Image (cartoon, rainbow over the protein chains, first blue to last red):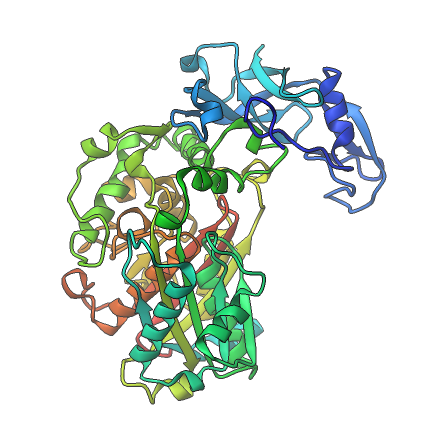
Length: 136
Length: 392
C-alpha cells in the first residue's frame, strides 16, 4: 500500500510489527537471540544464526557508520522527483547489522564512507515512521 | 576429486539461436521464447521431437505460473524433464548446469533452454520503475526510492573507497565493451565511445553514469544441450561443457557480507575444479556486465587479477580483443542487448560462436577455452561455466 505521498510504504507483517511499533515511538529496535546472542536485522521469527525461535526485542543505540552510499540523481518514480538529488546509504549499526536508509541533515558533498550517523524518523503514514540517518 | 567432476565433457551445446534484439514492438515474450527455441533447433539440425528436456525462465512482462509447461504446450513438445528456473541474471547459466546434471544422470537426453522477454517495449516506463524497485526488500529497502543502479553504485563506491578504483577505470569497461559491439552486426549500440563520453553522460546514481549502465531490451536466446555421445552426430562443431559451479551468498544487498567480493569466487573455484583448469587456461571471458563495477569484481573473484586490481587491469587493455583476456566480445549487456533474465544467454551463444570459430570480425584467435559468468540479484547468485572446443 502506498502512502498519500505516492512513495512505497512498508506493510508490517507479524514478524516486523514490533519493529515498526518501535519506529513509531522513536526507537530503533533489533532482535537478539536468547540462545546464541546473535543480533539481527531485518526481523524474523527465527534466529538466522542458530535457527532457534527465542528472540528478544531490544532498543538499539540508533548509531552507526556509513558502509557505502550513493546519490540518487534520477528518481525512481514521480513520488521521489521533487527530492532528487538525495542520498541512500548502507549504515552498519554499532550493534552489527547493516540497514539501508536515507541520509539527511548535511550537504551531499559531506557524506562519506565511515561517517558516524544517528537515526531519526520520517512519518510516511499514520502507522509508518521510516528511519533516516544524519551525521552525529 | 568430487563427484561433480563427472560432468566434465559429459554434455555439449549443439545448437544456438538468438532472436533480433532491441526494440521489437508487437512481439511478446512467449513468441520470442519460441522463436529463439526454433532457431536453436534449426541450428542443431534436429526435430523438436528429439527434445525431451525443456528449461525456460519466466517473463517479467508476461509471467506464467507454469512457464515451461506453457512454452512446451505452445511448441507441442512433450518433455520428461521440464522446469522454469529463476536465478535472475544467473538463470541462463544455472540452466546449463541443471541440464548437464539431468543429462548426465539419465533424466533426459537433449534439453532445449530458451529464454526471452520484452522489457523495452512490453513495460510502460512506470511499470519498469516499479519492477526495478521490487528487487529491493519491500519493507526495508524499497521505501527509500533506490532503483537497482543505486545498489550497484554502492558496490562501485565501496570498491573505489577500498582500492582507489577511479570513475575512468569504470568507464574503461564501457568503452572496451562498445568497441567489441562495434564489430558485432547484431549489437544494439555500435557507435564508438571514449572515456569522456561515459563521464559526460548523465549521472544516474553516483558514481554511475548512464553509460555505466546496461541496456533495457526485447529479445530472446536459446541453446540445445545434449550428451557428448550424441553431440558428434550434429553438423555444427559441438562446444563442450568442461566445468560448472554456482555460489549464492544473499538476497538483499544490505545482507551482503562484503561489498567488494562476491560468491563468484566460489562459483569460479567450483567450475575450475570440475574442469581441471585455471584462469591461465582461459582464452576469453563473457562476464555479466549489468553495470561496469561488476566486471571489475568478477575479473578479481574469478582469478584473472588480484583483488582490487580490476580497474588497472581493464585500463591496461587486457580485456580488449587482442589483449590478455578478451572480455564480452559481443558487446555484453552494456552494448549488445539486455532483455532481463535472458541477458546472459547471449553471452553463452557468443561463447559458442567464438569456440566454433564463427565470430567474424570479433573472433578471438585460437580460442580453445572460454569462461562465461553470470550473476543475479545484487551480486546474489552466481554461476560460472567453462566451455571448450574439445571434451577434455
